[in-house]
Length: 431
Image (tube, rainbow, N blue to C red; front, side):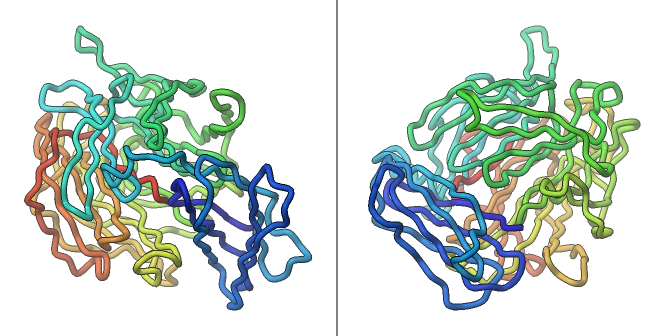
């Protein structure tokens, strides 16, 4: 099996990466989709499972075709794939958007969902506020960066009478054009789940369909979305071959085609858990490995996956999952009616033979439902907002170095978020 992807798509360049099933030499062919000229090629003379090539000098706003090989040219490792370069763009350049961290959704100080989208530029340590707005303000959404676009899926809206309702709404944001469009709705209402982008598809697991998780959790169900199939994407729903955690507000993200899952609260009683697992879309099953548990049972913890590419500034850093904060209390409602915020931080180095999660330095403040993302240029993880008490969102930002995540310490930045929020999501578009 080969896992391949494009990243850092710009008007004139992109990165094509793939993983072979065993160490092998890597070969990449590419050309303009409308060209009759021969394919151009890149060749790696070294045996490796992971290969990545930066393609530069491309024509803006144009579709390209590519195909990757592991070992020899005689046997194609993938079908012909495509990507499209971005149009010439001043908007993204002005906000350093391809290297920025985007903040979507959540609940503000008023207790209402937030539509305002802000971008943090970690290179210059500045905020760009209100760069766009989510057409339908939501919290507890599953928000995924997929092929240089951002998908806000499901979540909860709040009516004028104060009632929170789970929704199936899906909206796509295109940073290159700073525009939104409504996609096909999910097969069910869903909030509090997690997801992964794999090649041309998005997979979602976990969560619940109602505000009372005891009545709406979907057991062992996988939702698959193909954004490019049809005019507004196509959804399908199917049952996993093995049991998936029936939990809400898990922490989880994808590395090398697997969706790591940990924590969350059980649908039947709202109790938090510390156990972990991984869902593998290509096998439609969970991992056969007994994944390590986090240091303490909790839900609503911030999470981020660190997955360096060979073209990054620090390509040799190990991939890993970071989990910070959360609540150790039990609750069956969404939004919760009480929390016990935690200041815990855990680090899981994926691919390690030890299969262990290490406890790292505590966060300076206990935080529930903050959000975390990575700056690969700065070699840091950033923790944004969260609630320090029930319905008390914060606007603080903390960072931790990734050269030694368990060494720390966490440091508070001297720049605040434009809007205090919790139950939001931080995303980047260069992965």
